[in-house]
Amino acid sequence: IGRDGIGDWLSTLKNKPLVGKIKMRYDGTYDFTSHNMSVIKKIDDGGNEYQEVVFDTNAFGTFFDVSIEVINDLEYIVASCEIWKRFSKACEIIINRIQEGTLNTSWEIAVEKSKQGIVDGLMTKIIESGRFLGHCLLSKEVSPAYDSSGLFEIASTDYDVEFAEALSHDILSQG
Image 1 (cartoon, rainbow, N blue to C red):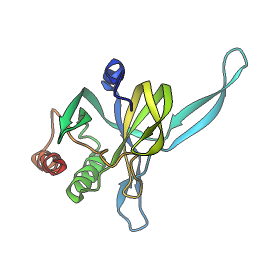
Image 2: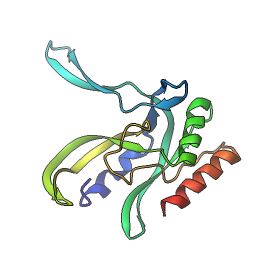
Image 3: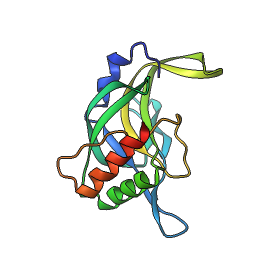
Image 4: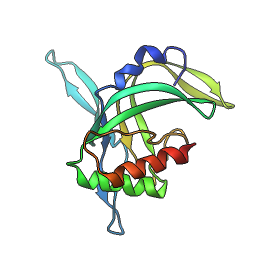
């Protein structure tokens, strides 16, 4: 994500969902999967065919605050999210994965403008403008696009002590 211009669309994350798809693994445990994105063909009212991106995930919470913060001399997008406690299996997986240090996540962004550029010696697609569609909880087997992608701060109006302690541990271990 390009630093220039992100301030113009950073706020599009507000009121967007924290998403994931829960699946039973081969060993009988549960984990998240990935974005589960696919492209489907549709026809509009005029008979014109077009493509639409769909995600096979569920919402487990919503973002209510987003900013750019400096952590260890690097800028990060930091967002606060309320996770809905009624999704107890998702909360359980989140707590366990945070305690294991294996909870990675990934942005879902509708890219409006991008360019190619060199980042850390590699040719990279740099997003100049877009809008956030959500943020996805990933399986242990799915690596995020960026090593630093993870949950830094989650807030809930009705969370339990174990969940809060797990999140505090995760936030402190990021530093």
